[in-house]
Length: 508
Image (tube, rainbow, N blue to C red; front, side):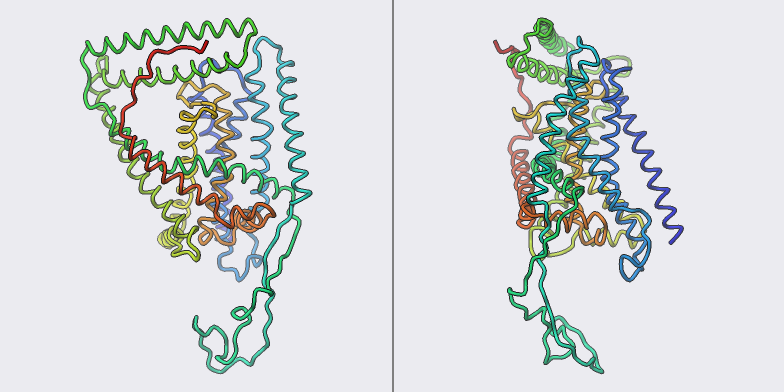
C-alpha cells in the first residue's frame, strides 16, 4: 500500500501545479489588452479562483482513489488513508466561500472604481462595500447556525432475541433469518420504533452547506439549461453554417453596413465617456453602457462571420477549408456531447428520481472500467463531473444573453476585462460546490465510503430546514424539467438563423 500512497501524493502535487500553470495560460490569452501589465490583484484572484474550482472537481476522483488504498480493509479505520480528504474538502470549500462572498467582490469593486481616484480611496471604497456584505453574511450565518444549525438523523431502534446457530445455514431474500420460525426485528418493526437523533453540525460544515444551497439554485437553472444547450448549440451551429463563400460585391455591401454600425457605436461610446467625465452616471447611463456592450458583441460576431464567408489573403482557400473543418468538429463534439447529456439525464431519472433505483447505471460502468484498468473508471468519473461543470457554464452564458436581470460578462479570447473574469470565476466557484455535491449523490454507489459522501451525502442531506429539498429531489426535478424545456426550445427554434437587430439607438 505504501507505493500506492506515494503515487497518489505525487499525482496530486503534479495536478495542482498543472492546474495553476494552465490557469495562468488562460488568463494571459483571454485578458484584454487594456489590462496588460496592471490589475495584478484581480489577476491573482482569477488564477486562484479558477484553480480552486478545478482542484475541487478533481478532488472527488482523488477521494475515490484515496479510498481504494483501504479497499482490502475490513472497515474504514483499519488502515491509514493516504490523504486527509475530509479536512481538505472543508478547507477548499471554506476558501471557495471566502472567495465568492468576500475577495472576489472586493476585487470587482476595486477594479471598477473610479480611475481618477487614488489607490487608497479605491481600496477604501471597496472595503466599505465588502465590509457591509461581510457583516450581512456573518449575521445571516450566525443566526441560522444558532437557530437551525443542527442535523436530524432518523434512526430505527431494533432489538431481537438470540438463537442457536443452526448446523445447516442457508440465506435467501424470502427467508433472511437463521430459522424459518423466527423473524428479524427489522422486518417486523412498526413505525413507533423510529427515533430522531439531533446533533449540532460543525460551523465549517454549515458554511459549506449554505454555500451549496446557493450554488444548487444556480446549478439547477444553469445546469438544466446547459446540459441541453451545450451539445445542441454545437450541432445547430453546424446546421446554420455558411454553405459557400460570398462574392466580392456582397462582401463590400455587408462590410459597408458593418462600418456604419461601428461608427454609430464609436459615437455612442464617446458620448457615454463624456457623460462619465462630467459625473452624470445615473441609471440611464448604465443602461446605455450595457446596450453599447451588447451591440459591440453582436458587431464582433457579425465581423467574424463575414470573415468566414469571404476569406482573404494568399491562403484564402486554406482558411475556408479550416472553417469547414471547424464546423465538422463542432458537429462531432455536439453528437458526442449529446450522448453524454442523454446518459446524464437517464442516470438522474433511473438512479435518483425512481425509488428504489432501477439500476446503478453509470456507477456500474465506472466499476467495470476500473476492472479493465485501475484508473480508467476514475478518469471516466472525472470526465462526467467536468462535463457537468462545463454544462453549467454554457447554460449561464446562454441565459446571460437572453435574460434582462443577468449582467452580460462574456469571455472573449484576447478581449476579456477583469470584471468579466471575476464574475465568471465567482459563478464557476459557486457551481463547482453543487456539481461535487450532485456527483457525490448521483454516483454514491461508486464513491461510497468517501469523505465527500460523508459531508455531502449524510450531513448536508440531514440538516434541519434543508434536508427536505434533498428528500423530495427538488433540485433534480427542476434540473430535468429545465433540460426538457431547453431540448424543446432548440428543436423548435435552434435551426433558425439570427435576424439583424436593426439600427442601433441609445435610450433618451
